[in-house]
Structure formats: C-alpha cells, structure tokens
Length: 317
Ligand SMILES: O=C(O)CCC(=O)C(=O)O
Ligand SMILES: [Fe+2]
Image 1 (cartoon, rainbow, N blue to C red):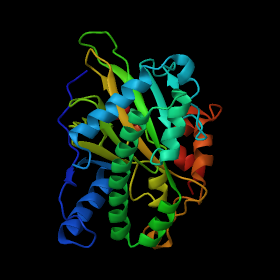
Image 2: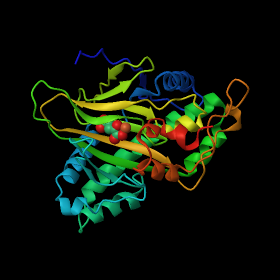
Image 3: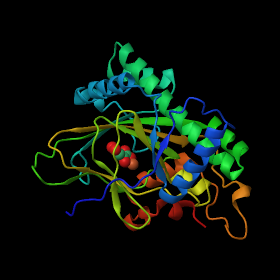
Image 4: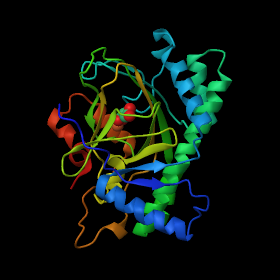
C-alpha cells in the first residue's frame, strides 16, 4: 500500500476561553466550522475541556469494560439496533465493541455499570459521565454554530431537546502481523447525527476519505478529537453537510482503543428546515425517524449496494 499523505483535515481551536455565543472569536470559529463541515464533513477540534487526566480516566474505564468476561459483555444490548456488544464479526475480524445508551445521563451510565458489575462501579461512572458530558458539550457548541450560520437555530434547539447519545468503547485487536496494514473498521458513514471520536494514543489508525476520493490519516492527541457528521445531519442539512466515509487501518503491533460518542434523535421526526430549501437547493430528503432508520440499516436482508447510500435509499427524494 502506498504511503498516505499527511492529515488534510482542518484543525479548529475550541480551547479559546471566551468562546461565548456572539463574541468575535465565536463568530470567527463559526465560519471555520461551517466551512470545514461543508468541505470535509468533519474537522479536528483542539479542545481543552478533556484534560489529560480525564482522557486517561476514560480509557481506564474502557479497559475495564474490555477486560470483563464474555458472560458479562453479552448482557450489553441496546434499544438502538446493532449498537450492543460485537466481537470480531466476519467482516471486521479485529473489531470488538460495547456501548452505553443515554451515555450523557447518570441513569444511562449507572444502568450499564450495574449490568456489567452487579455491585456497580462508581469510579467508572464518574469518569465516563465527565467524559461524555465534555464531548457532548463540544458537539452542541458545533451544532449551534452551524445552526446560526444557516439561520435555523430554533430548529436545532428542538432537535437538541430530543437528542440522546451513545458511547462506543471500540477496540481493534493487535493483528500480529509485522509491516502489514489490516482493516480494523471497514469504510462506512456513521448513521448518527454527529459523532465525536478520541483515540487512546497519539498516532494513526483512523482515516477519512476527502471529496477527491483520497484517504487522509487523522492525527489525534489527547487534547484533540475529530467531530464528524453522520447520515442524519446530512439529511437534516439537505445535503449541505455530507457524512464522510472513514475507516480504521491497523498498522501497529498493538491493540487500538478509541471512544466514540454519537448523537441520535429520539421520538421526533427529522425534517429538513424550510430555510434550507429553495430553487437552488430542492428538497432532497423526506422527514424520517432516526431509530427506524437505524433499524433499517441493521436489517441484513437489505441489499448490500443500497446500503452504501443508505440514507438516500431510506428517505431520499
Ligand atoms: O475507532 C475509531 O476511531 C472509529 C470507529 C468508527 O468509525 C465507528 O465506531 O463508527
Ligand atoms: Fe464510524
């Protein structure tokens, strides 16, 4: 495999102290965010609300989950079809995942912990909740900026009221093959509204496809994460923001851990705001229910190539 070019994705600073809505730095960052999402569907956020300490604690929590016996892991099932415990499926033999539904609420995190550890696990809950809240805050800041740029703030506030988050504890196991690149996660678009990802160690693994078809490596440090649009955001924005294809390539001889926080809209149909429809931008997507869409995608009887553009085949016009 030819070596890949350096990371082409824009890096946007969210560590600025006075990032208050309406301030000059907020307005400047808003422009950068909207442009980056329209051009790449994602960007790297440099974000100091996740301290090194919190980052480390979240990955200690992830390790604790992956170290559980299989009898406990199989209890991890979710309302969101296809998001529970997965261990090395045929199409991704290196991939293992568990996830928490309602991951930004104490109820969601404690419910998961009780299921995994019958006596509970307070340290786990504390670390995970602080981590998910920090990432969700970043996502909301990003989406408020996008909504302001498009003049659809009220529509976003309604969606936000029906937003729920899933935290995925992802692991790609060591491929045990020197000097050979192996696919950890197959190329896909996220089915979420938005996704924020942190990985355990500085370095490589995650790759994003840019609009010219090239794959670019994503370099993340503990104080940065990638913010990425999912299919639901693509439909809601009437196609202005495209969910990018991404994949994980394993090229180091060790396990790789990442934490993925994805937002979903529950109990409210996602509808393109009228402000985003005009002569130059005809309506591209019908109103749809996000959880029904997840169910549709998890249905393995749906033909493979229709799944490539799943959101369009589900509710495209
Ligand atoms: O592990 C990662 O860095 C990304 C995984 C991913 O794309 C996903 O879980 O949807
Ligand atoms: Fe993904």
